[in-house]
Image (tube, rainbow, N blue to C red; front, side, top):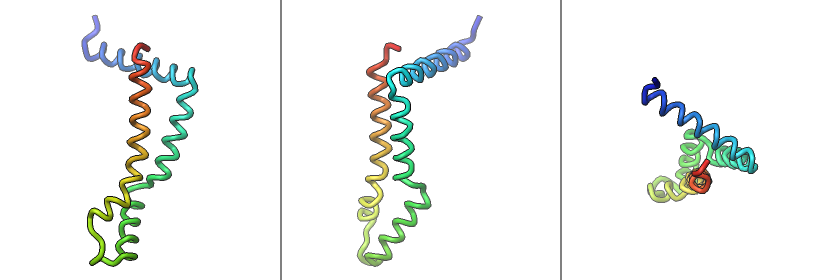
Length: 98
């Protein structure tokens, strides 16, 4: 007899496999991978964002930059990943009957 933990892992594994298969069947898997790859490239890493903030401060001058200015500079990068996550969630909701 399976324990609930093992049963839940099996269900999660089965759901992951079924979702992956469905993504492959409809051609969405490769599209999402490319979108993720592009978003990761566009977003850069923490160090790149930090360097960008330093560049903005240098260009405008420390006395002329606010935290809001810096947030406005880096927010679009985070939105790209949020959009990808929303697309994946929408896909999963649409295909919940896998």
